[in-house]
Image (cartoon, rainbow over all chains, first blue to last red; front, side):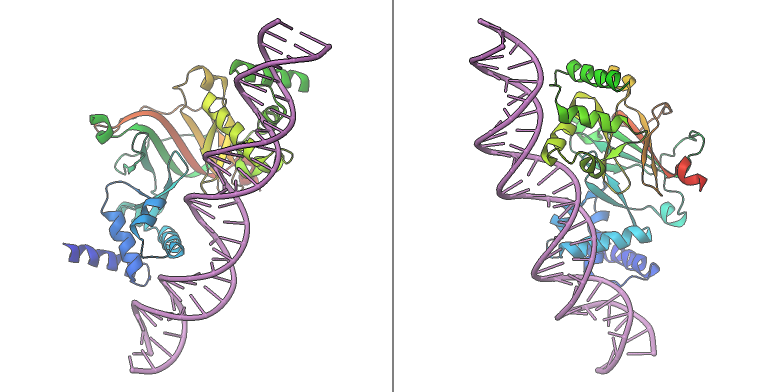
Length: 143
Length: 143
DNA sequence: AAATTAAATGCATCATAGTTGCATTTGTGA
DNA sequence: TCACAAATGCAACTATGATGCATTTAATTT
């Protein structure tokens, strides 16, 4: 399974003409191991053997290539999540719902929910929407 | 008119049991002079005679009291806008639409638009929504 | 109107997020 | 396996934001 997963990531890097390096594969592994977005500070902690600057550069290219997307949580902290295949194929289809738990502060990407149609005041031309919801996540609601 | 406006701000500070000081009135004046949100760096530039720390503290109390609200733009920069009266009266009625222009980077608060009803996956309990749209604003569309 | 006091400001200092330039290393294609 | 472009690491720097403490100031009380 780890084999297969790793192959999937290597393929992903190939697709975007990026070299398959240790730090890059590790970033993908760390992010895919969670069901929520990963904050930059957390990621930095998980990647202790990798230079901070390298991490920033990896995150930047991944975002440019559409491999991951960046979400700012309620505190303005950068969070990153791997894009769904849907997101990669249709570049303009980036309408996500992001849920930010006010208790544990986790950011959930609820990609399945689609946003309803919307009309803006005259003159505004939108090319992307993101809906943010804040509240209590399932795990924090339980206890 | 400046008199009246100033009185309105003084009244606003009174309402929230905050002392009517120069820096605070200046922040309110600067923010209300614009039809878009003001970024923290811009605000810092506009308030040159006021200490950076004081500005941060003013923004924090104003936000706590519900006088202003904070919006992070596409770059993660903090932007601030004065809340509408609607927003002050009903604390839970903070469903805004924020439009971030990708050309001039301005953030517009389109308070008038109401968000459609939404249902989240089971277990998620939302207490606030914010819709972000990015694209081109009326002024940048023109030219 | 002057004195008192809590609140607000200013200053020094620190922490963290993010960037840039350059030298070194490493993946990949010839 | 060689060569070169790409990626990493390191040093240094900028910007945003926070904290502790001394000083000032707005508002209250007499």
